[in-house]
Figure 1 (spheres, rainbow, N blue to C red):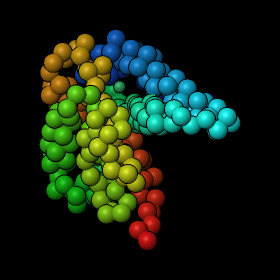
Figure 2 (figure 1 turned 90 degrees about the vertical axis):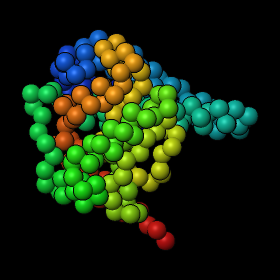
Figure 3 (figure 1 turned 180 degrees about the vertical axis):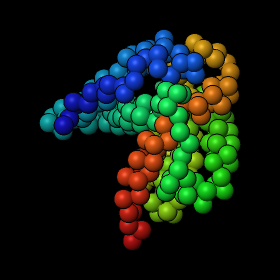
Figure 4 (figure 1 turned 60 degrees about the horizontal axis):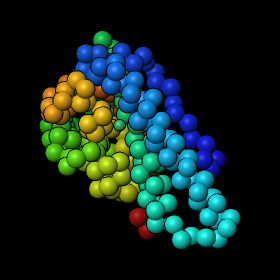
Length: 207
Ligand code: MN
């Protein structure tokens, strides 16, 4: 429905990811930053609906930019929250997901090294992703700037790491690398496996 996106509840409390991500960061990140993207997306969709009604598309370039930025911001955060779990409940990946990781990266450690390097090297605000590429039937890493730049369309993110400063600065200050390295302790690989299973259901028609 146009302009009716909502902020999802977290599956855990704001302090559940301590000590790797602190309570205050989680509270601000979810209730303020993520809510801002939800609001921005709804606003963009409603503005586009008004433009369709009036036939006035003079602001279309700006509206498409807002739609891409806030929409990606919203959806990326939805994935990011699900991809994490309290460290006490951490379990290494297994099954089909682990098999695919080994096939495409050689080992889980190799994946962590590549994904981590990509996330640490994002210029400014952005994201690290592990994504399923239907056309090549493989998992790939992507390093997005902002929420939506440098993506590869038709790939489906299954694991997302927010490396905007708002995700780590209160606790880690300028040490993004420490945040990225610590983050592996709270990755919810069972959720990643569910995202992966769903992503592999999508067959991109190469024509
Ligand atoms: Mn964020």
